[in-house]
Image (cartoon, rainbow, N blue to C red; front, side, top):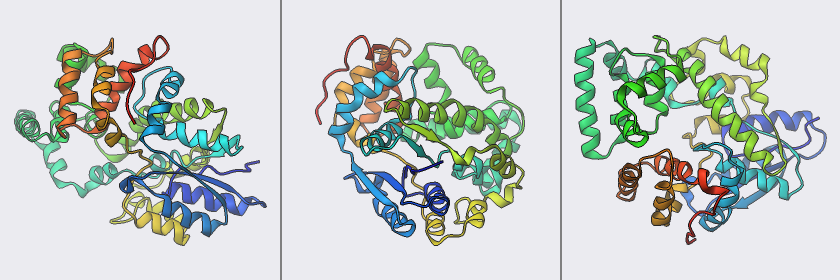
Length: 366
């Protein structure tokens, strides 16, 4: 029996789980959310509105940079292999444990099952330039992408450089790296000290790419690599770090299979996130979340890293996997506002995990 709900954010998936659980459970549900002083990341009001609507016993934990830095050694020690995610799960599980919860529900998987990410709309026809690009003859496409890469390098817009993954034969794997990849191929080669041929072989081996480039092909790959290899593993590792067991209703096999059989058109709609899910549960709170701009359960790690950029750069350059000179160069780009924080954080993790148990990370200031 599910007796508690872990309310991870003020988003649509959490609202759906809370709505269904509130119907099925006789007593008051307990919900938990994380709040921040940085308003751009804070979904506290949406979470409170959902709590009032579903009559839950609501708990909030406010996290700041000092909390993040103080818990960083414990977070890294719980990580048995590098991941760029999991900070959110670590803290919300810690909060759940502190109020006495042992088993929680999560909205994880809703975006993968019901196509909640923006790139599904791109792939299904609302991004004409992408269709045009994929349809170009290979030599012309490579020329266009080379120009895009130069533009991205000159302007610091890394997403333009990641278009290079579409330069050869278009595959779902190329699209996956364009949307999910942290670094352009050239930067990956420099960071890892591998040739372009070695990198291409590794990509093909890991992704087992097919030549389809529609939303369904991308979703199959995202299910295997992003959801299975990263999100589910992180949820397990960082919830169990606090002896919390997390249940994932959206990945019930019957629900996932039924959603997979829906046509692509049923899973996207202009201005509405996850329309098929909204149609299944048209509650006003769910509808409000479906029409809001999607935020994701993201911590303000970027500002926290920037405030401690030198010790974080030092951690990144400790990595046995990364070229120290290239890592330092990219960290300087982050400091100059030309690299997304998630790339800098990935390098910090790669540098710190190998040393987390042997020695503590450098001291940082809150």
